[in-house]
Image 1 (cartoon, chains in turn yellow, purple):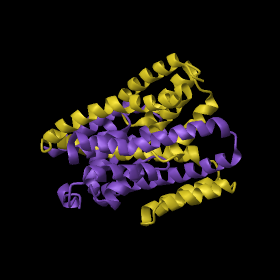
Image 2 (image 1 turned 30 degrees about the vertical axis):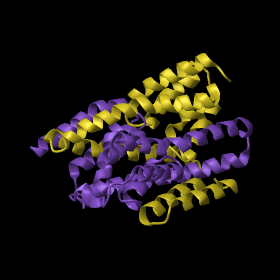
Image 3 (image 1 turned 120 degrees about the vertical axis):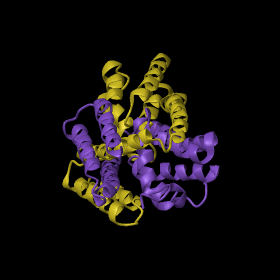
Image 4 (image 1 turned 90 degrees about the horizontal axis):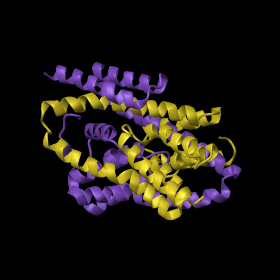
Length: 176
Length: 189
């Protein structure tokens, strides 16, 4: 489906979404789903779920689900424009905030902000791990894959890519 | 360990090409999301950041709007090499995966019904979840080791609110973050 007006609306939505997506793109996925599937019918339910799985499994940031949707709406240019729309405005903002942030390195308020935000981050990463594990683990085999990967990554210096290779092989053999 | 200044953990300032290649490595290995790999590459392999510095930078990039891994790349790149460093890290991280997504998009429109492909995706999705579990454990470990009770309590509240009660993340950010900062501000006085 190639639709220039749909693509430009989608790009505008991405810019807006990127500014409200505090806490990362996983937090923005439900809103992306609402706009792309429910409100505008650019993608079917199945396509959206598949795109989410592909963006999660493929190497690279999970935000690239937006790149896939952009490709669907406007081909290669749509894909590139979607990535740029999602990243550029907030990256520029981050650059200037970091400069100000580092200038106040020893200010007590900055130290308090940092001390207060770190534990929330720990909780949010744990929450994402919990939700993704529940979504991914539909069988005893996938639960075993998740636990084995977690153990290898936590307790050993073995490159976790081996766990991914084993998981892909198990999936290919029909066990996942 | 957490008291040592970041300078001690970074023997030299990475060059632009090292930054680009470092974040390219994060992107290329980042099956199932790049966050766990960012820690593996930045802290464990290349030792550009200490444990504590990574947690602090991650926290800041999560609370700035936008994809948080992109924010992390801007943060680290701009600190080491200014604007050029930020651009090098961002392109290292997003460039190749964007091209890969375009290939996947073209591939998908032809082969979306193939069963073995679905099997591979399911297996790798499970491994990706496992990797996130290990990241959560690594981030929580210093808090547990040093028995930082208030920090652990805040982490537990954030986890419960988002994972179990399913409160929209926006509210957690708007309500819990200022409360947590206020607690540590008050304790620091």
